[in-house]
Image 1 (spheres, one colour):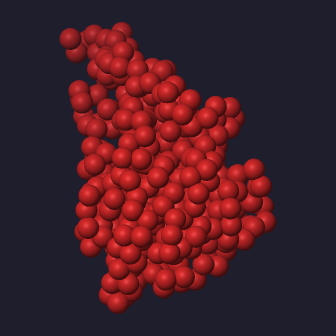
Image 2: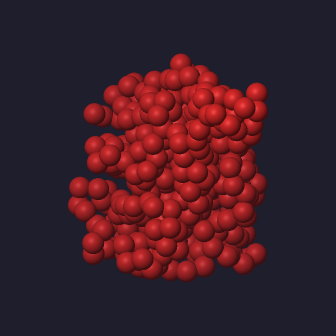
Length: 353
């Protein structure tokens, strides 16, 4: 299906199943409401999947990997070649999130949607839109057609995972320079100044941060993105990784799969998806609040409250994966714990009464 057809197909999560799941929680033999927001989270997953018997044992992390031409402006601490290196490390168990995902029982799916060079074992021609974006300080990052294809690639990735039986998807990204492009997108969508939303990324100096802010200002001035046209914003000042993640959130809503938001970049992509289709937000699960300045601002715009606050800003999907064991524990209690009815059938309980 095309992007417009996918958007038209998206409906809100099932409210009746949500309420039925809440009633099921009341039967679990523990103090009522004692797992707090985790109970609501499990009921949300039930509503998303249209299944009161929540299962989260098959989990995937989708990592959208792409390079950004704005790196040539000197807005990053390291060079563009790091993107390809880390992308390759995802499948070699040499990246932080690879080890975290292993402990969380989560399978990794790095997607080369726009890395500046091909990555052995990762790059697939059908998913690669182009070899990095253009420099947004000089003009649009990509064409509108490329932006749409990137979003559709994210949607298609969710469809493929759903067909393989995956029940929960986390979002991650890898791309040197992507905090610059995501900050530019966020500046436009939230009507904020670049100073309010732009952070140091992977350790920029104060001088580097100032250069990054000036670059974002120039990119917005030159490209004049239209905040009422999300694809236009992505085209002019965004990145291919962000566009792909936007598609993952849309795909989660279209194919009834819960999708976990990671940090700032992932949240910026989620905001793009929400602006394209408000009902998409029903299918999003916030993991943590990024230490980047815009991390909290974007979650507030999504009207979502994070489950974890550890001051993380690693990216790669690390925060989203960190939430997975918590979801597993909560869903385990929901499914497997004794009910009050089962308690009353127990001889020792009857003697107490």
